[in-house]
Image 1 (cartoon, rainbow, N blue to C red):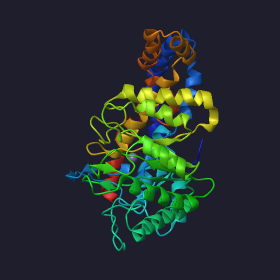
Image 2 (cartoon, helix red, strand yellow):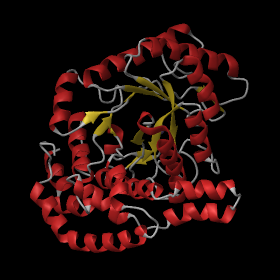
Image 3 (cartoon, helix red, strand yellow):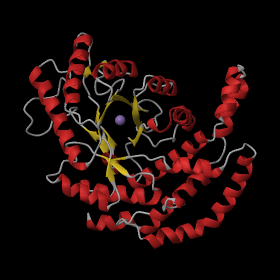
Image 4 (spheres, helix red, strand yellow):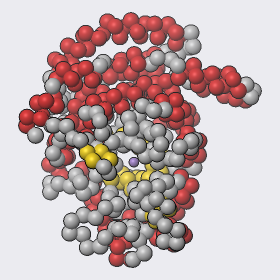
Length: 422
Ligand SMILES: [Mn+2]
């Protein structure tokens, strides 16, 4: 158990847990009974679920919005220190979100060492650093209006590369081990850009950043089909990302943002391909109805997320501990309190992850080999239809968190108190 300065009074967590413990015990008993018939031990699932950690993005602690407007609630964090406080509340209650992913320069501070110390006090560490060449910063010499890493002008590309080196330097001081690169480069109109040359320039720029990447760091490249460029995007899809990451080097891996796919895309098949190519770096978790909607994970298509998790669980069974993709939430919290939405997200992820852990891989392999389509599909359905909320709750409880995180959070009046201070 870690001794951290968590912000929700511990007795509030314990009081709530005491209230829900008996009910949880009953639910676990009945789940245990049904899982035993399938030769599954709850203890086994629990252990693996406890190892499942998801990072929080610093930008996800604010009220997001659309290009049409934002509707912030009172008490939101005003700087990265306050963002860490809110992230710490999420982690205190879930015990599944021990790291925060920063955005540079939005989270830039003069004293990164002080920031690192503060994070430690809050029980947190730092995940991947995110760069930004998709907008111009005040005082910047060259504009990114027509791109950054793939820009036609060498001076602009060099400025964009220098920015990435700055992000890495900042991240090193925080103890981060990765840089995540998403670029907005592309074109709005046919004829505007030479596809091959812009891609070549992008790869050449990545290579220069890669040279400055510390040995124990990973570079994640994130693809997206469209927006802000609506006709052509330099890194539009997993195929382009695979070509680029192969060209750049072994520690250049691909980041799959679930919302960065066109409707109907079989994302789990893409995930399987990237695993096979040893190029799956990690995930930006969210959900979408249409495109990059950044909605709460599992709010729209939980079965899709379950199928993606199945690919990951089955790969980790085969590949063991060396298979460690990074998981980050990347959502825009427009309508819900960001802390509540992050709690809800993490709870949903825990539920679906534990469902994926319930799949009987050898039975599935058997039915697949016999081309027994219905029974093979049923192996997935059996796991998906199992109510694993109790296992997720038990995992939080055993790790020192809350059985019912949102209930504790609301009881604590955390946001109301912050609204008076911030
Ligand atoms: Mn993303």
